[in-house]
Image 1: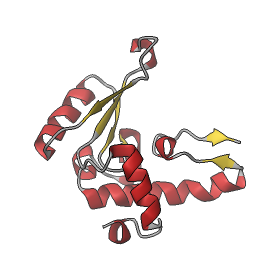
Image 2: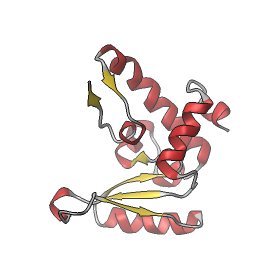
Image 3: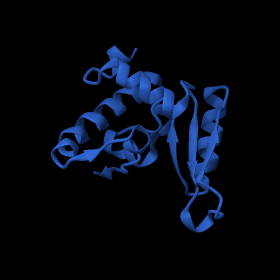
Length: 133
C-alpha cells in the first residue's frame, strides 16, 4: 500500500515511520495535552488505540470538543495539517489518504531541511518540529 499511496517516499521509510508513530495500528490516535494543563511528569500525549473506525471517530470528536490537537492513524497526521490538504479526521482514517498526506508532508519539507542542515526525526515530522544540527 505504501508504494501506491506514498509514491515519492521509499516504502522502507514509510514502514519505519509507521512502526514508530502508530505501531501499525490503523486507528491509533495521539491526544496532545496543552502545556498549561500538563503535570510535571507528563509527556503531554495521551495515546488512544481504538479497535474500530467508529470508536476512533468517537474519540476524535471528544478530543476536538476539548479544543486539543491530535494526530491520527498510521503516520500520525496532526489535525493542523488537515486544512492544508483539504481533508478531515475521518478522511485521514483511510490508510491510503493517511499515507498520501504523509508523502506530501515529507516531500514538501525534506529539501529545505537538508539545505538547512536540519535533522528530521520521524516523531517530529508531522508535528512540524524539527531539530537543528
